[in-house]
Length: 163
Image (cartoon, rainbow, N blue to C red; front, side):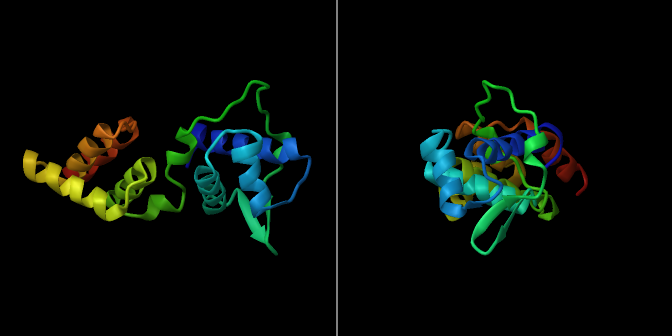
């Protein structure tokens, strides 16, 4: 994750710790804050936020507690800040090492709440129907599900050209 997306994730994480007035939270306290206290996310999405913070090494878990790996007190967060659900759909830095199609599958499944196998079935059906590359069929399915696909189009183009 780079640039604006990382900044948004950092802002969300920083704000949770700032508002709680603590540098360390239990996992339950973190999820509860992001979902129930602030009503930003569902409990499932709040757990995903926590997982994303851990994957991107912005948070670390020790002895059952979560703490930021960055100085959250120095992160500027606007007073009217309300996180967008888009922060949950950004690929993590770890995911960037994964091949494109599996990353697309993960993003579509995460966004839609569908099981991976159901996403694969929809993508296969779209590919059979249209006769396009599998990644293009995944873009079609993602778009049908209301996902923002602009960030994937150039990656798909590069993947297909490189073959």
